[in-house]
Length: 321
Length: 284
Image 1 (cartoon, rainbow over the protein chains, first blue to last red):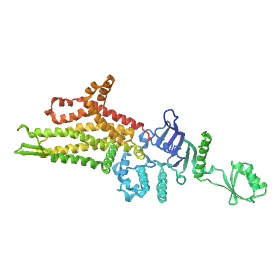
Image 2 (image 1 turned 90 degrees about the vertical axis):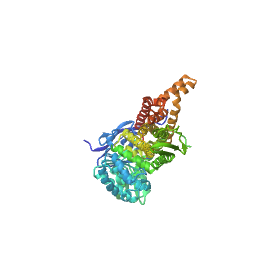
Image 3 (image 1 turned 135 degrees about the vertical axis):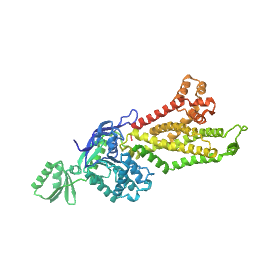
Image 4 (image 1 turned 90 degrees about the horizontal axis):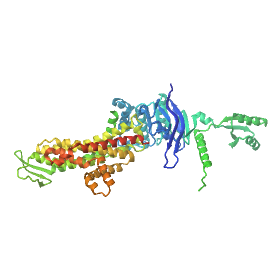
């Protein structure tokens, strides 16, 4: 028995690009799982396949190969969406509906009883700070309000799986924090949350685990801590710092930057770092601080995306225009 | 049932908010008012002494025409007008249902619910048909009541004629849904549905057209098309024949044979099945 509420196995998606042309591969065999109570972030540059993945998980698009399961059911079964909530990017809740009407319609479509919906609506609108606008038409809502209502509609039927595409888009900083808190509360109650966002800081602040998609593949996956620790950079405070020391370090293959009187070293591994420290001691230099420099998620993301760009440049045989 | 109810609520709220419902019933009301003011009957001691339609004296041919015959004549004539009016208004008011559902950002919200695509599309179809049906009931019911009020003649066949009109609307709506699922365009759905309606009217003369074409294969195409697409001309005549009962010539009553109904129903069912199939295939 597994507690995975979202499970994606060897998922592949190809789009036809016209007669005689090879298909475009949007997803090239990706795997990941999201467990109950986990906040999972899906990252990647534009066109990496994030939205395609979410749409396959919801049965909006069919996979070319591979399989996806929600709450243990294949996504081709509409029942897999019984307890799944979805907030699409750029969603359009019909503007002619009020917040109450929209939530009633979507709640009913999820199988809720009228009595349950009546109890649930005020409770949820209170949580997303829309109580005052319960009977106002959605077309009069600001972008942030529409986004918060979209979240309320996704939560109306008490889902145990939440898929959110740019949930904080257009929301003010206070609203963002509230949404983060709300998502954490949902996760604490056992909901599996899949978050798809371009806002890396948002993912970093919210998610327990992330996967970075690149060229339709999972380029990196792990906790934020694991991903940001992978970069082997160290801050070294040493005296004296002179050019001969820097040259000695560079001869070993380390990348050395002098920053505000200290050194930032990029090394291959811990063995390499220890070699540098040995050399330093042999010279009689005094080491007063050696600490790992943690990358931000943005650093990791940018490095991964840059790798793609450089790969593409190398592959390209087109002369520059 | 909850899905059907949700779609009915959604379709009606949309029709109300976008003024479609108001325009739909406003146009119908104008027609009813014109009809109510157009008929002036002069009834003396329960007998019809004279009648005016749009200010013109109706030919009484001495004292032969009874009030019942006059009502039958009015209602038969108006049922033909209502056939066109109801069908046109219905397509105009409902052809947007699928294209708007398939809009990016909207379809995701509906399909992410635990509802099969078949159920979603058919619920939408039923909701649209209910909206169109309500207008048919409103138009025919109001006119029937006006006639009843002015003449005290009860003629229920006029109301039952609405069923034939609704049958044609159901067929054309199925076609509009098919076009909507394929193109996601309201304009194309309306144009093609109206086009089908008029093309079918022309094909009522299929035998004469087939005889006039120069190649046999062209004649075959004309005859095949006639059998495949809805028989809007025959069904229009059937509405009048149905309302008139036995008061019409035999040729007109002959339109009440099952053939136009069966082939039109087959077209509607196939259109709806294709629409559902294509809706399943669509990727959003």
